[in-house]
Every structure is written in structure tokens, then in C-alpha cells.
Length: 259
Image (cartoon, rainbow, N blue to C red; front, side, top):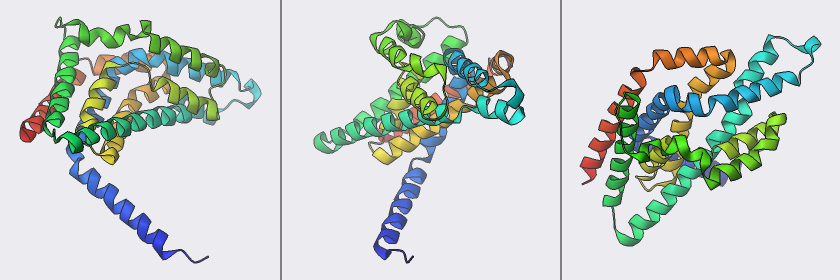
């Protein structure tokens, strides 16, 4: 079947635009990927690790012992639908946040707001890193640990609870979609940085990079359980906060260039 030249041209133009946007915002993408990687070493492993372990247990329980083999174990521990759902939510949030900020920039000519968003993200990442290094900081940096008491968290728990019984296929994807909305301090900082360019595609890519960065620690917990989580946390106890501090400096430099 012969391809429609107009559709081919449209696809090529869209791909070129995405590549250009990714290149223009490469610093933000790399920074948020590393922020997700560093954050997952401490916060995500503790907050989302139990969700991962409960899903792995539920998936393996549904496989008869006579049919169990290593492929099933690896497939069950990977939780691909769950992670893909979580990544989808992050990217949608990034696109929505960038759409809103982009509209503000265009209507009110407030380009300096982008710098403010970057500064907010930098200060939040820095505060989180310093807290992990043992410094006592204001209540705002503990918000993510206390978010479970919020109305939004209770609503999300109500929706997601039935999906835990058999978190495979679309149910696993739905679980990832739902839990991606859980209140999380690192997520707030990432959204602030991702929305700073005011470009929807850039926001989607930036939050996609952040989501990918959070995966290694959670995959490690899924494959090896609590042992992997403990080893990951011990190895990255000092490295992860330092990485977040470096990211904070990069974001502050980006904000300085906008002012």
C-alpha cells in the first residue's frame, strides 16, 4: 500500500520538531533524569518500594507453582505496565503544566516566571538533599512524607486499592496511572522545572526523563526485594544528595541566564 505523501511529510515535520525541542532543552532533560535517579535512591525507594513489592507478590501468587519459572519471576518483577502507567501520568502532568505556563508567558509577557520556577525547583532539590544529609529544614521539605494524610492521597488510595489484587495488564497500567498522582515533593520540584520552558512538548519530555530516572531503584527492588532496596540506599546515602545539589546548581544557573 502506497503511503500518503502528506502524512509522511507531517510525520517527518513532527519528528524534526520533537528532536529540535529535545536538543534545545537537553540541559533540563538531563537534569531531571539525574534528579529522578538521585531521588529514587532515597525517597522513591522508601515511598514507592512497598507498592512495587506488593505488586510483585500479588503477580507471583497468581502463577501456579507448576508453571513457575525464571521468565515469570523476571516478568513479574519488572512491572512494565505499572511503570509505563506512572510514566504516562508524569508526562501528562508535565505537558499540562507547560501548557498553563506557556499561556501565561504569551498573554502577559512574563518570561521571568520561568526563572522563578527554576529557582523554586533548585531550592526544593537542594533542601531535600540537605535534609537527607542531616540538616533540619522547614516543614515544606517534609511535605512529601506527610502527604499520605491528605485528601488527594486518600482518594488515590481508594481508587488504586482494588487494582492491587491482580496488577497485570491494564490493571497494572491503571495502577501506575493512579499512583502517579500521589503527592510527592520531588514531583512538585520536577514539575516546576519541566514547566519553566512553557513548551508542552518540552514539558512532556522533561517529565518523561524524570520518570525514567526513578525506575532503576524501583526495578532493583522489584527484582531483588528489600535486600536490593537496602543495598541501593546504603550505596547512595551520600551520592544521591550530592547529585541533587549539583542539579540545583545547574537549575540556578539556567534561571540566572533567563534574568
